[in-house]
Length: 501
Ligand code: NAP
Image 1: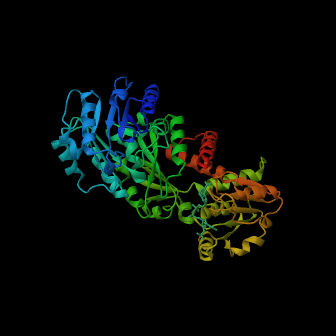
Image 2: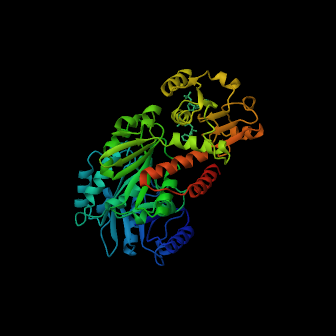
Image 3: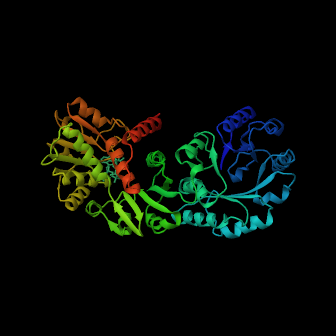
């Protein structure tokens, strides 16, 4: 069940948000009384409530805003119980001070904003034995993949049907986010969400509409297969939006999650994939090279490029692929062909490729496969040289890019990416009428470089097409099915516009 936390400053607003959520089909809300600007008035909030309520008055030490004294808080919690509220949230260390009464259920909570305590089992047993709980809530902060895995193992153990008490286990922060969605797969009775995306009541709490409509939380069950993207940073990844929408459209019982995995920790998640029922991963910065050693079957392109952006766990094997190279070559070729049925227009063409990072090597590989003559450059000359040696193409100095004569210029640096939208990795003097310019940067879709290209009479090719293409290829690798590129394009355009507003 999704429990929406209502955390606003006025009673009037709290009442109207409760009504709105009841109408939207939400079945439980948490009233965060510590957010109210005036002293909480339970007589206004509880009598005509349209749906079951948890009353919470969070102390500052537990991430709340309660500014009155502790005795007043205790009185408020006891009054809520006497008023017959459905649940009252009581912190484990003060549980003995708030006795059970009537039908009100006791949700005994523990918060740790620093870490995942070493002995979760002992903590759980203590709460279970000493605090008279109906529901237990343990919200802690994972700092590593190892913490996250420990939390998943714990939530499975404490939610065995018929044993103990229903236990809500939450990993706070970005690393913990998957626990908020996947808990349902492992019997966790509910998860918390926020009423509005702007109101982050606790670190990492999702917006209830995202949880309900994008992650389809209510549809998750023990059979749901898990996919995700591993990256650091992860916050702006659009992959969950795309893949969850594609799973939904195809009617598949699969969910796709953002896993924030710090550098050097991807291997640990891959080693433990089966414990999370992980079936596939998108891989991005900084893991594209590191994960290669973990693959048991490699697409030869991955070895040649030195970067893997897609992992599939199947038949006890771990398959590594790279969909960037195929998608970029295809979208560049499609524009260059201009609708004509010809052999690859890239064959024999001179290409100047800027940036020898993960995307640069993959795009260069795809173009070389099509017969293009690629020259790589990077502001770090040794990186360009190493990439060129690996791929079997030429390289040039970063300064030489300005006078390089090419049929196609490709930007695979991150220059021009939001928010630095007025930057370009190459000036207008290097762009000529009749040439093609591809920009791997897709946020914004119309980069400064692409606008310069148009002004100079060159044909611009957007990185958004590559992004959509690589996602479609990944979806096929994950599911064996195709998906709608136009649906993904619409979603992305909307999300990118929102991210810049
Ligand atoms: P990466 O491995 O971190 O490489 C970043 C590249 O950008 C490096 O070559 C880096 O040069 C260069 N760079 C960064 N700042 C620069 C500056 N101020 N001047 C010159 N060069 C600079 O990242 P990546 O995965 O290759 O991604 C690169 C870009 O491609 C990103 O914008 C990413 O969003 C985009 N991308 C798009 C798609 C798509 O589907 N459209 C897919 C993947 C990536 P140094 O080596 O000198 O640091």
